[in-house]
Length: 481
Image (cartoon, rainbow, N blue to C red; front, side):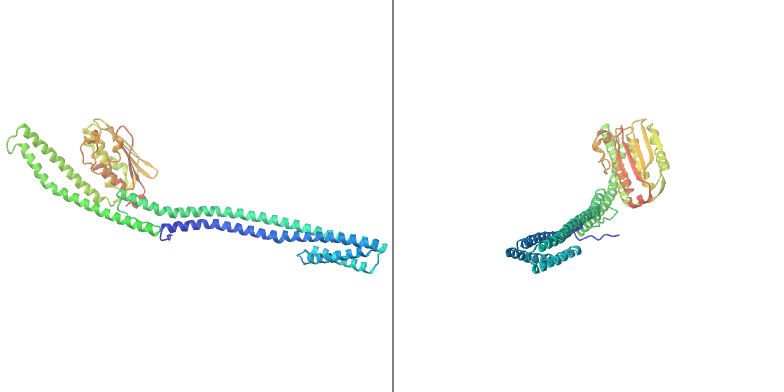
């Protein structure tokens, strides 16, 4: 599935931070709603129940005042007590009406109506009867019943408060659990979103890095394509334009080397023939100094011819280094053929060969791998001392075929190890510089190994020790082609 990126890298960052922050904002909003709902329940339930309980207690206190005033009137018969009762009765009716207007449960409303009926019956009886002992007994009995009913109403209010508090506690637990599970769900969601946008951001950056690295390694065959925001896509297009320019410059360099090499061959031939004529004495006998000069001319013309042939070979290598003619190749047979080709040089120096090869096959370009092994073996023979030992190993390691070639020569100093793979580099260390060569062998080795998506490295040892890793699978090699 192709990912649709925004136009700029900044837009991608803004979108990423927004989407990652969205679950957290949702969690905060959900918590705020939950706590607001909890506060509303507290206000509607507990606060209302508290008001009912307070009004019930106040009504009970007013019943006690009615009882006291009415019984004093029944005993003393004074009019002032009756007026006090009437005043308390008026306040009782007001409080009764306020309590009746509140939100009551069915049990509370039934108790309140019973209190109202009995209070009205007491009031009617008190208005008809005079202050007698019978009235006092009646009031004692009826007010006791009325006080019980009023206390029952107060108890009902307390029970409603307890129920509201319990309901509030239950809702609080539910809200806490909801918030907890919401956070449990949002944390992995946020982590996944962070990982996804990290991938979206890192992918184009890694593609840019890989493109720059391929340019630095001279791998110009594969186009550079960047998938990402518009500004990074444009950067990828500029890198691909740079790749095409480097390909053009590389082709111009190759043509230049070919032309200059061919142009140098004609005067070099004349120079070499002239030095040969002088050395042979065809144009007259030479004294010792003249023969020495003729010898120097002859040797340097031969050396120059080798350099020109090296340039031509290097140009041919670059012309062929853009494709692979790959097939399944038994590498252990290839190693034996390369050793057989160098048999005369090996015997002439009395070199001993230690061969340790497994049966390994790889999907590769046989001719190019043969050049790689031949160049490494040629260098080992060149730098090995008389009757030295050259070790040649071939084995499998995971998905790679691994070659190791080592000798007992002077080795490669640490500062030289990165430079020996550069074209025309011959080394600054006297043991290396003393052996003449074109400086192209290891450069060709590195190019052919890289073309196969392989790696070459120099290991520690008493002499030179090279290790090459080549992918054995067809898919790995075809991706490099």
